[in-house]
Amino acid sequence: MVSVRRVLSILFCLLMAGLVASLAVGYFSADGIQWIDAVRIVLLAASTAWLAWGAAYAFNGLLSSPFRERKQSFELTPTSARTAVLVPVYNEDPVKTFSHVAAMIGSLHTLGVAGRFDFAILSDTRDERVAAEEERWFERLQAECGAHTAIYYRRREQNTGKKAGNVADFIRTSGAMYEYMIVLDADSLMEGATMAEMVRRMEAEPRLGLLQTLPKIVHARSFFGRAMQFSTSYYSPVYTRGLAALQGESGPFWGHNAIVRTRAFAQSCGLPELSGAPPFGGHILSHDYVEAALLTRNGWIVRVDPDLAGSYEEGPDNVVDFAKRDRRWCQGNLQHGRVMVAPGLKPWSRFVFVQNIMAYVTSPLWALFIIASIAAPLLKGVPDYFPEPGLFPVFPRVEQGLALTLLVGVFGLLIGPKLLIVLRGALSGVNDAFGGTGRALLNTLTEILSTSLLAPIMLMYQCRAVMEVFLGMDGGWPATDREAGSVSLSEAWSASWWISATGLVTLGLAFQFAPEYVGWLLLVAGPQVFAPLLIQVSSRSALDAAAAGLFQTADDRDPSPVVLRQEVILSRWRGAAQTAPVSQPVAEPALKPADAEQ
Image (tube, one colour):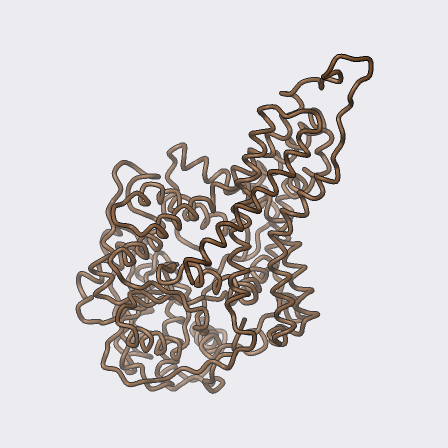
């Protein structure tokens, strides 16, 4: 069944690309087809195929999901297996990070299974001041939570291999003690019941080498962050079900909020250092998909289970910080061009590497399409009004209908699946957890509008990232400011003035050489011209609007106990409130099965 889904999905993408190409031929041939038109058609077809692949995930997710889902129920089966919970940190705020650890320990303690899990904080921090704070707050964490479970802290002298090297170092020194490892990020949060269920599923399938959960975003404060939080809660379960249906036993690994079988990981996932200098050489930055491919190569199952609720992370609250993180992902994904030819990999794993590369190459393809469209009238010269001998001229036809059809088709691939998710949510009752169908539809349309405005800005950041990589510029692994607040207008201008300039130049050239395209280009160049303002406005706090229902999620209506616990601990640790110590379970709603989602 997985193979059939894969073939049908690929055929769907080729069909969409072919339809768009045929429409483009009709539109561009109004004044005769020349080589520049062929270039535009190829660029448009390739970009459309990538959009269609994203839509294919949604369609597979919609078709593979049961119409009505029952409440999730986790079984706490006895096991003697030991599990290490790894928390890699790199110049993070230790108060924030350790409050997450304390909340997860408290959640496990409430279930009575904390003794099965050991927590290991693996520091790669380079800043000595931050390292001193880590040690101080580790003592606090140990004092409050050490009675429930073992907690370890170690700091490497050299952060060789970045996060992947950090985890590998733990496996070499301590991995033999544990059957499983739950790999987290510094901002990860997981319910104790979810961690226990992950262990149970690993025990139930001896061939399962890695089990990935679907982490949802929490604690978003800005308009930009709230839109991302709504997307991960409302759309992502459907898209991830489609991903699971297509990838089957060759599933994804996103580097965190996942459990791995230690023996399988140790035997399969030793990462090479690529020859040559960065950005294409050196340590593999996007190591997670490579590790998934290596596990699959050795016969282990890699699976994503979207039904595993109670898995959370935090995301950037502004476009600038998102773009900084995206720069590292871009470099790591482009490195996959060298990894995909490794011997023994499954064909699907190689195809996944192509997808990872296309995720970033598509932005330059769109940019080249725009450039080619502006340049086309200049390169094609004056139309030949007398293509055949005779007295009467033949004037070019203005195929505005075809242009509109093209635009609707491209946007349909982007927004159509989201509207279908709303429709399915209305029929299945899922929308009730999101404030009802009216509220879900309004938030979906708002998210589509905001995404459409910010997409041309992100296109420019990704184009710059791809260009920097191909020019040999190493972006490295910058520390993440996980609590970055709003961006001032001056900061936004400093980060995006070049995008505004590009938008103005694009419109100026279009007015000069291709006035018939100005109306369409406004959809892209317009947001780029106002990039600093859009970045600044989208970074503002949206908490008041959220209270009124903006981007409302199921977790807003029924917060997760581990999230509530973490908020209480962090508030107390930062001196904002005085509550009971963590060694006495923090007051929180009783644990219950998480609400079933799409």
